[in-house]
Length: 128
Image 1 (cartoon, rainbow, N blue to C red):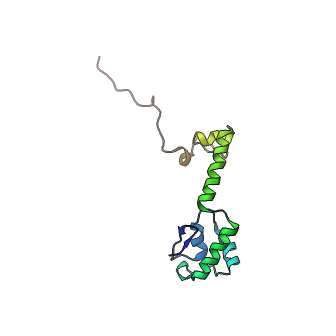
Image 2: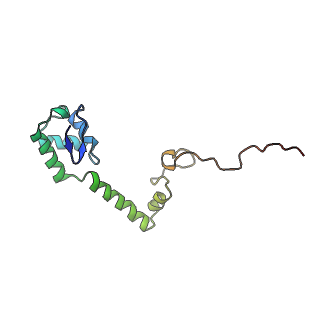
Image 3: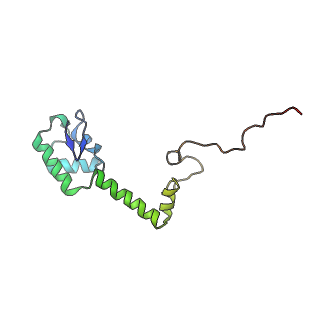
């Protein structure tokens, strides 16, 4: 099992897919990295040599911000929006969609499980 940027990439997948398991590397950047490292994209991750893994790691360290550092940058950007009370920051604080999506219906991923507000339950008939 190869470790790249602190992530154990799956050994049974092709290298271009396995690299996307690193936070901050998608399919396009994965292919760009492999072209620069002169590694065949369709080879399985378990078949990579130590030299190839080293070349891939050097390119990622030189040109890309990935994993923990990228997550710190994103969290800092969101914190900045919250601190200056920007509209997007307020939406983040309220756990609501921040990119203009509707909230009357849908938005369940962001808002969580549906909570029924009181007043809709039938009243039980009582004997007088």
